[in-house]
Amino acid sequence: MWDWLFNRKKRYFDRDFEINFLKIILLNLEDSEKSDCKDLIAQVEKIKSDYESSGVIDMTEMMNLLSQPSTLKDIAVANGWDDQYIHIDKYFVARNSGLFDKAKYC
Image (cartoon, rainbow, N blue to C red; front, side, top):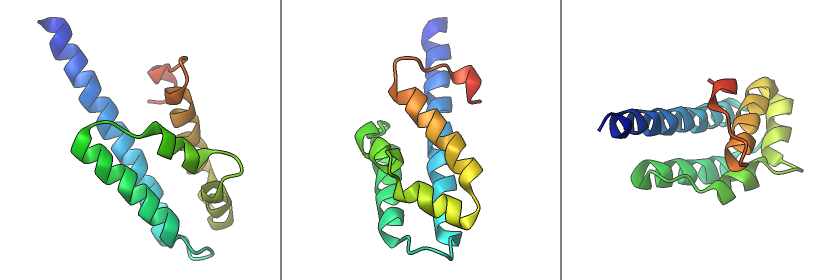
């Protein structure tokens, strides 16, 4: 029973953590004045909405946003939030690999 409780809390923490990362991306995109971000905002909103309703993040869509060359990275650099982008990118790349260690990213 204890394992179930602790695993449940961890899952909810992971989900809240990732939704907050998606919110950070959205807020930064909305404030990015040097770039046209409409398409990216729509993509991130879709990922966030799907994740909130299903509880499962579509890693293919997320990795497409972060893959190189990345329009999202270009916008982040042009608008001065590249440090946040790099942190989020590292988190999702690690999450997508088999080497995910949450302690590095919390």
